[in-house]
Amino acid sequence: MNHNSKVLMCVRKVVLSRLVFVFIMFAVIPSDASEMKETLRKSLAASLAVPEAIQWVTLGPLSDKRIISLEIRYHSERGTGGPKIRRGKSPDQFQVDFPRLRIAKVPIIADATFACSKYPSLCFHMQEYLNRVDQEYDIENVPFIDELYPKYAADLERIRSGKYWAASILASVEAVVLAINLHELGHAVLEHDLSGAPISTATILRQEAEADGFLLGFMEITELSAVGGAVVLLQNVFREEVFGELTIKHPRPSCRAAAFTNQATQWVRANLPRLKESSLDAEIDRLSMSAIDSMPLLSKLLDILNRRVQGCDDYNKHVAIGVHKTAQLLDEDTPLKTSP
Image (cartoon, rainbow, N blue to C red; front, side, top):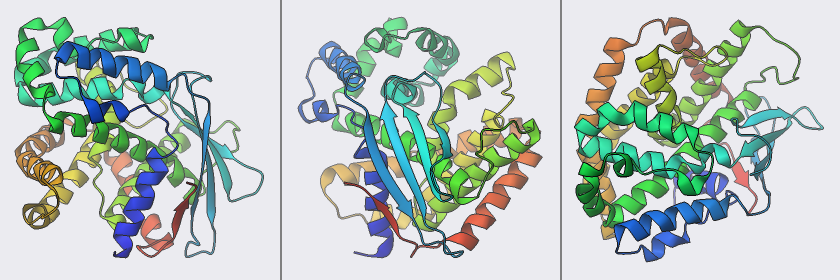
């Protein structure tokens, strides 16, 4: 097994082993689509009821001899916002507070995104759908997209009966958690101001862009794809495009989505030969071929983003700085470890 394979396995443990989502349901997917949807919702609700889980992650030594240590606390109790990182007891120790509720809806939103990619006419309803999802705090009542637009129900039921649908939903959660945790790790590695003291909006935006640069740089080093990062931003991208609502303390979602989609597109292009030649089991092979088939969709999305997105120069500049700093601090041989 080469080093990148070992890093990938470790990264997957980092993002999944302590998340404690109840995904065992996918081993026995109900044949009836309505039963499947209820099973998914109930399983997500059950996942929010489990006790707080803690994972310890270390990265390093880096080129400057630091060993970064993260204590990630996955919980369902403290607020509904995004994950937050703060300093621990020593300079290179950090704690990440990760609300499970932040990503509890991801599988259902991923299902809607999957449906949108198959039936583009559904995309015109995405903003209305996502607003409805935003308004629902009880996970068992979060609607699937065809429950609001029933004329698509029969077609989507056929899609959901396939194993690739289940694998895609699982992958969406893994990708989102990976993107979030690598972004938070980037704040620590790049020595950002995490004191909690007031800092300027310009400094916040610079740090957020650099942390995105770490995420993208780390994925390039470990040969991972950043496509999951776009899923994190989906709701805000639609909100920005439709209503012109811009975030104040985070970079523009469209700027970030363009950067992540560009990296994901490059990854697919670079890995086409390997994907085509995959001799792994049938399910993985089908996933590989789906990645190839997704290329036109990724290219179209990237073209739209690049033509529509403006005002990203500062963000792109600081992303590039983050990527450069990351390349100076670590490489494919930098140890990454996680608790079981």
